[in-house]
Amino acid sequence: MKSAVEQRLDFEFSRLDAYLLKVFGSTGGEGEPLEISRTQGGMSNPTYFLRRGSWQAVLRKQPAGVVLPSAHAIDREFRVLMALKGSEVPVPQPMHYCSEREILGTPFYLMERIEGRVFQDFALPGLNPHERRDIYRSMGSTLAAIHRLDFHAIGLGDYGRPGNYFERQLKRWSQQWASFRRDDVDNPALDQLVIWLSSHVPTSELLALCHGDFRIGNLIFHSSESRIVGVLDWELSTLGHPLVDVAFNSQAWSMATDENGGLLGLSLVEMGIPSETDYLELYYELANSPERMTTFHKAFAMFRGAVGSAGVAARGEAGNGFLPDAARVGRKLALAYAQRGMELIRSGH
Image (cartoon, rainbow, N blue to C red; front, side, top):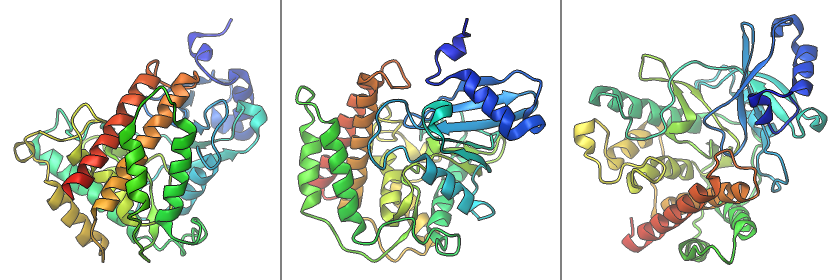
């Protein structure tokens, strides 16, 4: 009889157990039972903590079932972790990549498990104003460090396709929205975003390694210090325009507390959290950024958040969601992101 944990897995426990012993042998805690637990993150790519004796690791895999082309790019995640080893951007040590679908049903990889703190809300409940200020400075400086990297020097010169980044990304995410869209689930603001963005695509030669989902929930902070010790979830990373990364990271200032833990309406000065303007100025200075964000960058980031949330809803409806109410949560966030995007356009911010 399978344990409660094994019953919740979307793969065969015994196959992974045998594979890990084959790959890691005694260094992987041979002779000890394998323990697996699902993490709280990894809404898109299922993520698990593994432990066998004193050996431990984090496993990331594609979700079960049909996935969209170019989505859930486990191989790209592993590649960028390999490239960033030893750089000024802190990432978990990559341990092993497996492309064989026979083991878990999808490709997967293993990486180091980093101990530390993960915050889901940008408001950082439980911290004092001094700690919050330092947390935000660490977040902004780490994003700037990613964008300052010489991506050619670390072997990522071919990590993105040639051509206008915005046009490619708009086409890709519009196609994903079309695949997720349901006639019985109305989201007119998202359809309006697609139309507005399509007629306001800017041109720019600025290019950098972009994380793609740089938010506070994807960062591990030191257990007692206000510094980042690991940047996680590189699934959407690519070579692109860095201000899209910045716009996605700064969405919190335009969203409510019940919309992915936003900051709108909170007393930021009393909390020690910088204003959006001050946070962006810090980034611009540390990244030596020659450009500034526009309404397009902000609206495009909201558009991507909306489509990504629609994807969470679609996987929930198909029975592949991590949370029991993934469909409801995904639909709610897709509406919120799209509506906030249109608000930014109407206000010209």
